Length: 176
View 1 (cartoon, rainbow, N blue to C red):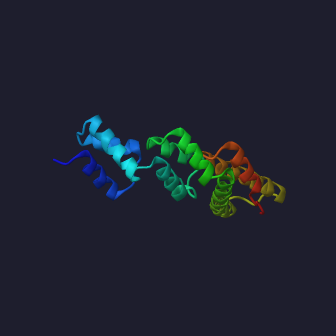
View 2: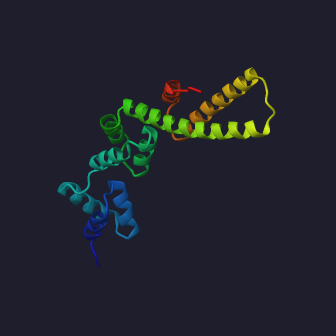
View 3: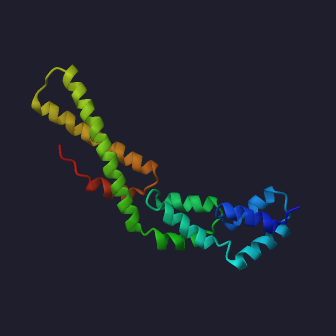
């Protein structure tokens, strides 16, 4: 029968774990809490188990594609202490990074909305009777406003804070 330490080393040879994840893994394999604590203590001494290093790598790898809120929640789900999460996010993911990520995502979503709007206007142009130029401009302005609202909602669903979304939407270039 394998020891908890051997099982932990085998798990760590496949991927990195937090202290909590490794304890859960070992508990699922039927090891006692004492065996798990002893194995984890030994791995911490050897430097194989380090929640701070894990959090730093996790945040660094995902910082370009996730918000601070998503990173924080992901690390919390993996059992990383809240103080470590805050320290790591302050180091790896400064607020300016979140603003930059949000601006980039807003630009990408805006381009997608403009393609959608162009298609919609082309369809309307084929099926609708020609109205006055003022009506057409008013309709287009309403559609642009709705596109901005959709972009803002998409950013909110991705977890960006309202003040960051507002600033990113203000930075959008809306030439038509």
